[in-house]
Image 1 (cartoon, rainbow, N blue to C red):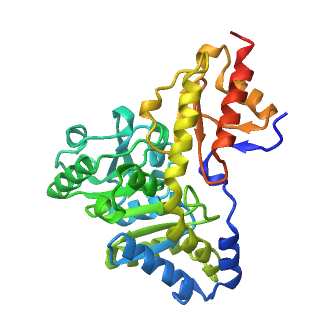
Image 2 (cartoon, helix red, strand yellow; image 1 turned 180 degrees about the horizontal axis):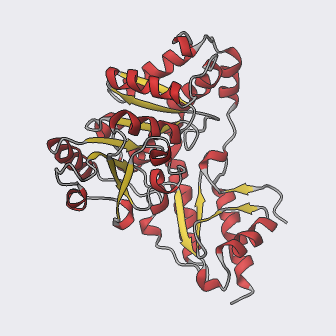
Length: 348
């Protein structure tokens, strides 16, 4: 029996490091609603510096960061163009509509990567009886496409053409440091043309809580108001910001390890009977694969893995998602592959 639980459900399951815990214990704090928490202020300034922006805003979650960014740049009755399998459309409780009064207009794109040629036809004509397009939202890396990465030249064209059309562009960059690692590029250069960028501390970077929005000072001032409206104003939150600072400075340095482990996982799964996956399409730390030919549904397959202390997540009745992160190493991934083969081996 596998002794250690190999938790590949998400990179959100990581535990804070000892360095983070020490930073949290020693954090200088103040009331952030009064903009008086020195650790939060430092974190926001440092994030803005890394992304080459005027200002940043610490928020409790990536979903809230995306919603705030949308509400700050699109008004009720307007539309946001986003990819059909994207996180803001599928996994954020329809908040842009329920709370922001904004309608998503979805575009289906191969591997989750939209092009300007796909976006342009989705922009509404200028007519008073039509909802007007206000914003284009991209996701990099794209979660439900298996952690795929936007080429920076594609991003720049989308931003330039959107701006020419009078639209703003938001980046759901929850795992943008993974994208930067894959491309070997700097996040500031990659994201320079976006009007707003949201990224998470609590995924691959390993912090326990929190996300950041960066952009212009005027936009961040507006976002601060909306954060308070949504209940995201926090008090002595420097305790969390201290862990996020460690994650911001140290986390990106080791993301290549997660990518390497994802390749080990993908290539091992590709050699397992009944599993469909193309390892060449695995770019970062997210591995999606089809188990339909094993004779098991994804739920049945995952139940059998869980009995052997390996955890993953179901995408639909056939597909499974596994995510590598700092709390699993190459030996864990190799063990997970071995257990997958043992679980499905009886049927072959």
